[in-house]
Image (cartoon, rainbow, N blue to C red):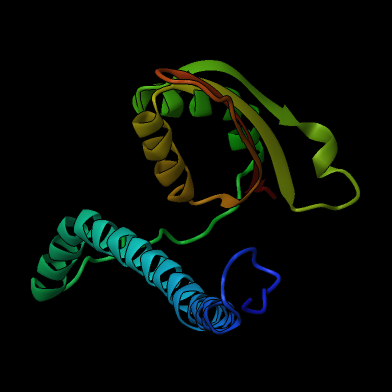
Length: 179
């Protein structure tokens, strides 16, 4: 009778070949397929990033062309800032009305214009003005541009824009030069 192996009725040589073949198959999977799978995942990630960059460039291309046309035409000219001058006492007393008219001229709805007389204390040369307006983002942008062109404008301390769509409420604290 022939000697038996641990694999049931398989001859020992066949069992050895089966064991060696299984080992080679496991080595092939561990050394060949798994690293390739990781490499393919890395390539997929790179392709996704490249696809995102291509879409981003596609979206930015019209802006680039517009900026290129402006640059070829000599560039955009910055507005000439007015000569800085302080508000006189008469100007300070009429400030609320003149700012309200200025705001309405830019298309915004005036909620309130409140100068802070306490900001002029202790020899300060600046007057704080709290402005609350309502309007569209385009009107607000126009207002801020016009505000920066005021001769007495110094800076904006705070700017609070309410979220939402359509007309929005904006609260701005502006510092103006005063005598």
